[in-house]
Length: 304
Image (cartoon, rainbow, N blue to C red; front, side):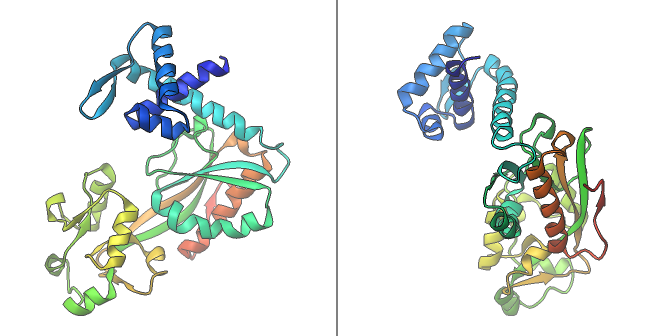
């Protein structure tokens, strides 16, 4: 594969992800006619159309959908190749790619990584934010912070413990309306919740709550937007308890009745054990995440 081929595949993935030539061009820092030529060249090479126009933008054809997975695998391999070549395995320098959820990546990890990066200025962290689990076997990331037990083989996984998730609200909202006495009493408060129901939402019903989408006064699928709404006093919502403790204006609601343990793991591929910079970041995150959730017991797992 030459450089021209790779640029065509990058253009293809960018259009799939953004839905238009103009948005793909912005994502690639390229001109729109350049992206169009690359897509047309790829279509000519394959002998088939890859996109059709629709009111919402460019829609991938059936063959394009089949090509997404191998194209992403090539993109992941290219990024992993670049990271591997950024420094030798025995140096504390170069690039380490970390993936985490939106809340962890925005509100928790930056503060945890400050001391590490100050001590090792040649180290570069790439942070990928997603609530979906990255494919560690195909090197979508070097290290992942996961909220479910990893099941893939060939992974090193260290259990950090449980982050407690519970209901929170802004203090002045509770002062105006009074502290809820029980679960039924929660119904007189406005609720902050999801827009699209997912498997994790259904799991959260183990909290004992039965709210549906139509019950929420403020709906968003962004965890960060939900946190912002709770902090603004728009209603009661779900938040990590250690994170909420950072904000003096937030209070925990019915902690004895509503408490959900969110299992937390730090994960990397076993092949990266010998790469010093990855090993260092792994151990640093495991240690500082343990402090973040204030566990009474030490973390277990494989250890490094």
